[in-house]
Length: 508
Image: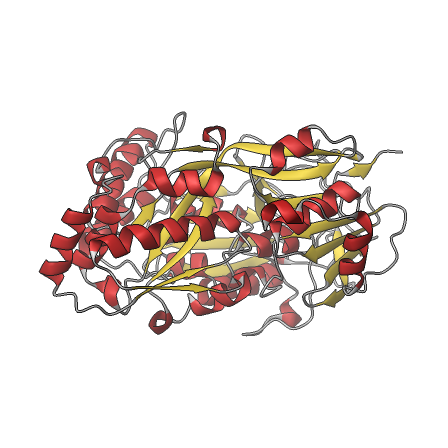
């Protein structure tokens, strides 16, 4: 099937894309092939990368990350003043920032947005009990008072994933209706499953500092950006190669050599990118039993899963620590439980659990094809250990919906970039859709997030990693490099897990 797809002709592609009814392409317009339809345009409500990639163009946060993954101000005027041993943040808010509806942003918009974030967003809910108050002290100053010091707070406020986005106060409710942000581009048309079109916001208030990854100036060189959901990775590749798209995310490793040899497109390889993970359901079903989780952990063979997923050792590494070489967080705690590939030991855990053959439900999707390929190998591993496996292959939007309903799944397959702050990873958070709740884990996690000394934080993360393996909290499959592709005419882009297109331009 894969080989046949590679022989699509340009005319066949044009016919297949015609059903999408894309507007005619204009000068200064790019088409971006994304892995599927974003299931929401409210960035607080999702931890999915496809949502972050799209919504960061029209919604912004108080802070963001520069090229060194340092937190820098965005809608905040400057970095906050921090007092009372990390319990009192005073944040100056930029003046002269305009929302897409023409209203002016002030501290009241920020306060109400942050309060909503603590109520509805996975990451916001995870820190809500540590926040005593969020208040405006004048039109352009916000104060956050903490019940206890929380060292990752600024990183959370900077992250575009489950984002603490700033909305107009009048538009804030349990469900956000009209898309109104402060970003360099504004939404002009959205046809679900066909395209989402944004255009330059003429009243955008950019920062003055030099551009530095997502930090600094956000230049609006392009007139319009169209995000086109293309679930099949081979179709994304062929569209990029034919010139239908200027950028395509989530490409398979086989595409690398074709892109290298292309005169019109080129590969974008993020190395190292991140880690595929099997997320376990701690709220309901089979995986609430520790012995069942340990049986899964013992049965899986990451070597085989990664080879099936990527096929080329240049694109993956079989590696147990939760962070790769070069990160301060890397340690060896608990990794004796990684890469066991031991069906007999897994069967012993199942016997201890009194497993009765109830199907183990694994959620996965073809839109990230490497997820599906890992799931196929995992099914073989798990059946060899004695599991009955029900592999449910759905589109990515449906997976995102189902994983929020604990009764519908036991494992879902996802991935994450390596994040600069471990607390940004929702899998450690009891409030996440996996719901890992444990008294010892909470004690270690609270100590980790309240500690400010870097060496002590690294020691505490070692304890957290030990608990991940000891309790089989989730399963890191390994490390991988991510392949995207772009037109050779597309210039000025930073290589980032969440591609953005301000500062980008099209060469003549």
